[in-house]
Image 1 (cartoon, protein in one colour):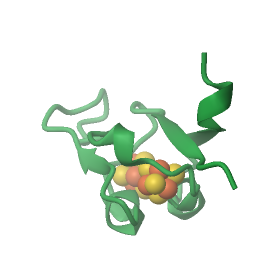
Image 2: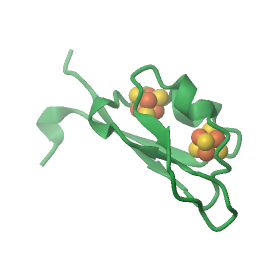
Image 3: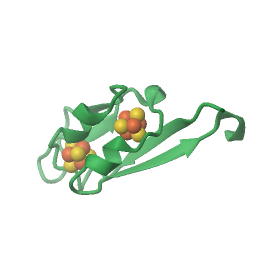
Image 4: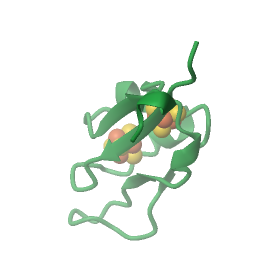
Length: 78
Ligand code: SF4
Ligand code: SF4
């Protein structure tokens, strides 16, 4: 089976920096940004995006549905 790679997009203005996704990610992709968003929270971002498998755990655990996950097969990537 072809390996799947993933990419996450996080709505940083909706994120409240709760850290749940950071701890839930099995491959340590996510971190909290040092800079705050418009609400004063430190939003999550994909600091180690190359390690994302597209498993969607982060999107499932986020209480505010801030995360969208895309999955790619390497042979389909331009
Ligand atoms: S999709 Fe999976 S591997 Fe990628 S950031 Fe989310 S939890 Fe981590
Ligand atoms: S779980 Fe959602 S609200 Fe919490 S830090 Fe992650 S993206 Fe932000």
